[in-house]
Image 1 (cartoon, rainbow, N blue to C red):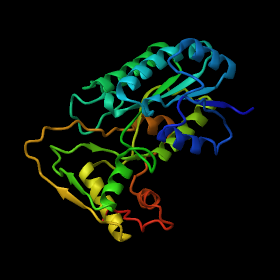
Image 2: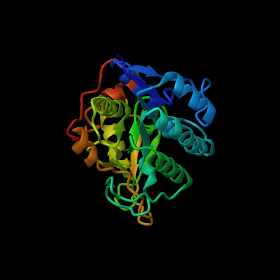
Image 3: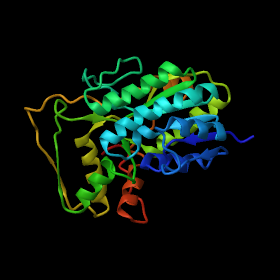
Length: 299
């Protein structure tokens, strides 16, 4: 019997990347179009889930591309619409969330046991959606992610590649006190993590609750930009410049670094460095045939 997996949003950059990974497996993958199903409509969601009866639902709505006010409302309303039918139909939920539920403590890295303290409206909406699933569902995982990167969508990777390859200046602050630190995580790598989780869940793994996943190689935006500049220079495409400005007046910025202890301990999932796949991703962003020779060690 083919197990059914449901992606709530398969059309955002993350959803598309996950679809590509998951469709290579033996699962039946359900991907309703946003025009087909409004996730905030409780009756429509209930009817769809009862008709399709997925085994596992992967909620990717936290990473869909909407105006922020509309996005915040969708996150909370969709969570409310999903919990009742998922409970009654015994559908396991993997809810993808974000490092943005943190921010008040300015820690070096956040563990799964750390108490969220969002500092803006989007962070509070993300946290509220997490609470709704946690309060109503037993069989659920909240998987928080750090910086997501990939060749599609508006994220740090294509944004910096475009600017540096078109002659623009990228201004970054190298100082730890003023720079945002995170762990760039390829969207396809999140797909690898979800496949590992789903397969073990379907085999009876009883691991639930909050988990974190991100690359095992934290960096600042300045360090990431310099790495991209080196790769672009190697292939003759560096036309812009990375300008480091040490801002002594900058206030400490909360970290986006997440510790993935529970993913490792409960599912045996090891973090991968973003540096390994970066040369190929840069080549794809540039539209060239040959991947740039890897700067694997960060030289």
